[in-house]
Length: 414
Image (tube, rainbow, N blue to C red):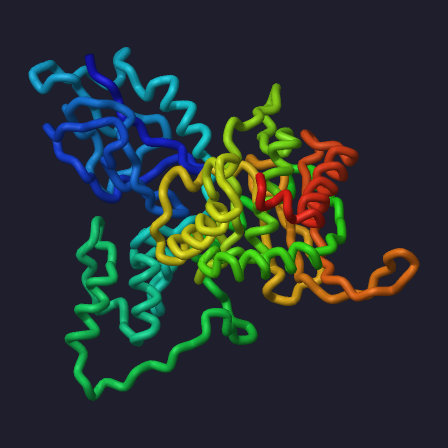
């Protein structure tokens, strides 16, 4: 009996993927969970795992080739002596259990992984001619002033890798004048800026979200004075805890999602799918856009664990070392508080039904017991999908987050 490994759907709008690199060969033994290949979408390169135990009986597509989502890319057999069945026949594909896991992981977040190939236009080329280069290599080439036309990529399909750029740098003559670096966001009036792969994906998904999801918004002010005092005291007791304001918010959101699981769901055509795990998405800025990887199974984590997971997630996101399961956010938090932002509304990332926008903590005069006092106030805005969430439910959910943050002991004892 044989099983088919299929091209997984790793994104909300993914239709096909490209096989960048096989990590196994025909005849290789497999255990469930073993990494088998690197798959490229228009947003990322992700290492996928096997859902079967056995041997690679046949590889069906070569490196550099594309395949539609759900089509077979390899056949796994229980014994190398058995014949490999035709994938178009009635052999098994992904099991029901693994299929559900793939579906749970189908929210792509524009996540760049180590050396994902992207297409960037090259000066003096026709629009149809493009160079394939990884973001890491592209950044290094810009910093070093390397002419990409002079580089022969050694990666799959001629992709230019970081090693290719480093080799070119070492071969350059010392007399060559370095090219001045241009800040990433510096543009010239009247300039046409080509869309990167990530920016194209952001444009497509946000347009689909705003056009297809009926957003509505609930705003609330939260008194963070006691939470900041407790954070400071806890930091003195445990100097390495690393708890930030964002850690407090993430913990409060997690607890509120446990109380109101409807916000941890997705809208389907004929039903609402409430997710079994809370995978807490965090908006993270990277060089060419925004990504929203998730802290998986956050419902099981303490505030210390959430704080540590958030730092680790941000670090690996910028390094391009995220895992496949971190594509599976079920509710997201976007925090612009570090940029002195007073208020903003965030766009829901499909197929999620909500996102919390977090602004700066600012000293403001407030009235308490008929007296004007100065308190540390933070504004938050909840964006909700009106197909799933009603106004009263959104107000209750936002109020629950407020209550947890204004009684911060609840964040540390949960």
